[in-house]
Length: 391
Ligand code: PLP
Ligand code: TYF
Image (cartoon, rainbow, N blue to C red; front, side):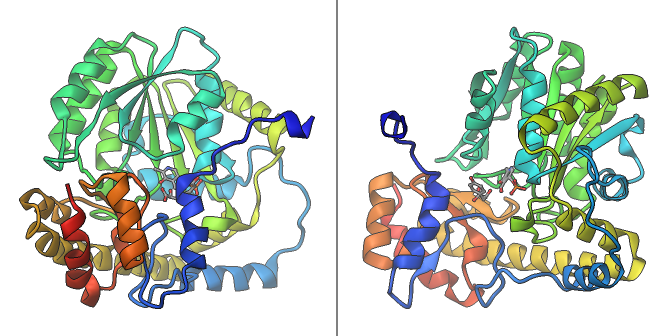
């Protein structure tokens, strides 16, 4: 039986990790997988996280089961952090999940219950998005979100697509720090999106994986909150992987917004039943860390400061990169106004591979770069090496 199976392609981003590790050249540079790196190239455990872990070690009394919905303290604390005071003025309910991916998968299962429903996805997007929705049999419809040559969002195409979507369709939206383009929507764009979604009876599903790494913790969520306030129902997949540097702890949550708490409870019950038949219950450790951090004012301040430090470094890199890459293509000065870790370079897969073999600079074939993979002092020389390969 095993031998009769079809060979599966590995995730190109995760594959790149192994290729980079196997490269013996000392000057190699990893602009591949989307993890934050500091100026020394490391992805450290945050101080607040270490302190929270220490506190848990001292105080945790039991590791007995907690149930498919996860930790209610974590869910409340994370909701306050992510949605703030405004909260869309709506009832909300949540379920803890294994990372943002787990939340997307549960949301996908729920959306796929109505076989007439499509999900609209702007391209390019995170490599895993289409695969997640396809795996539950949801019909995927795409529209062009970003023009790589112009380094600009195709707002009109996006709005026209949403206007023409059928009522009941879902639309996937990245809350901030768009993966893979870094492209940011203006507040007016978000209000237009909110109005169209509400008028057309669409269901927005937010993928919120980078809150706090763009403009600020509150600023990064503003557009999403505009939409939540305007529409009847909304879904949000939150990842704590980047914002708490908890990647391998698999920490996240799915939140639902609607008009009635009773219908939200029913929907969460449905999500919990999917959880029960796949992983049963979410891993507890990362969520306990997030809860302990957010619930303790002093730890919370430490975490906010560390997150700001990460954001400040990213902004600094972007400014230097805008100047350095802008010398090769004027449009690439937009790297400076883009946000989060990613930008998408105009480069063909063949040149990406040459860059890898000749200069030891690693990025996926798509030409996406993780700007946090560069040290500020190296940016000019990295750009010099990449520049000639741009299309
Ligand atoms: N959504 C986007 C846009 C991402 O870039 C990632 C990256 O990891 C995820 C979701 C998944 O996050 P997690 O590791 O929490 O599953
Ligand atoms: O896009 C990225 O690089 C991050 C990390 O299957 C990642 O989101 C990439 C692929 C994947 C899981 C995480």
